[in-house]
Amino acid sequence: MEGGNNSSSNNNPEELAVGCLLSIRTTLGDEFEGQVVTFDRPSNILVLQEPSKPSPRRNLRLLKANYIKDFTFLGHAQDPLDPNTCFLDLTALQQREDVAVRQAEADAERIGVGVTSEAQSIFDALSKTLPVRWDKTVIVVMNEVRVSSPYHSESVVGGTPAANDRVKKVLDFERKRLQLRSSGGQ
Image 1 (cartoon, rainbow, N blue to C red):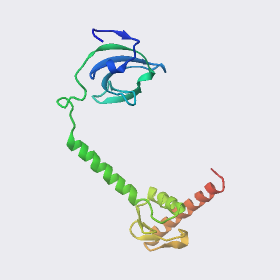
Image 2 (image 1 turned 135 degrees about the vertical axis):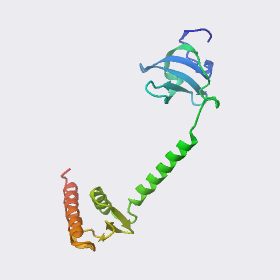
Image 3 (image 1 turned 180 degrees about the vertical axis):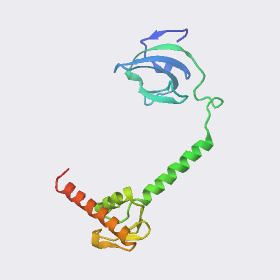
Image 4 (image 1 turned 180 degrees about the horizontal axis):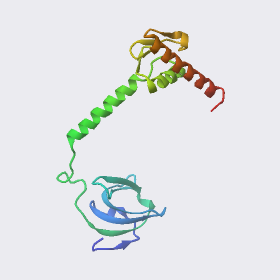
C-alpha cells in the first residue's frame, strides 16, 4: 500500500504496518480514523489508536479484522509504541495506584465479616449519615455507640443519650425499609 489516499477493499490488515493512519468503515456501519498499533494474527485483531480531540489522551480500539468493510490509507505517522515518544509519568501512576489501594482498603473495612446481609444493609444505612466501623460483628457508631446482633433498637448500648437516640432512630427506619423491601414493596 503505497501513496496517499488509496482506498482498499482488500481487507488484509497484515499489509498494514505499525504507524499507518487509516480511515476505516466496518461491516456494522461504524466509520472512524485510527493509527495501527499492532495486528495480532492468531486472534485476527487489529489494535488501533484513535485520537480524542479535547485532550492529548488516546483511545485504543480492538477490532476483529473480518469486520473491516473497507479502509483508506491516510499516511504514516510515528510508531505509537516508540519508547522515545511514549511517556509514562511513573510518579503519577504510583500516586494513582496508592489512591486505589487506599480506597480498596477503606472499602474492605466497610464490609462486615461473618455478618448477615441484613446487618451489612444496616451498617451501610448508618454509614450514610454517621461515622461507623466494624468491630468483628458489632457496629461501632461515632466511636462510642455499639450495635450488636440482632441489630435492633434494644441492641444499642453506650454513648451519650442523644447519640444513642440518633442511632436507634436510624436503625428503626432502616429496619422498616428492609421489611418493606422483603415483603414485596419494591
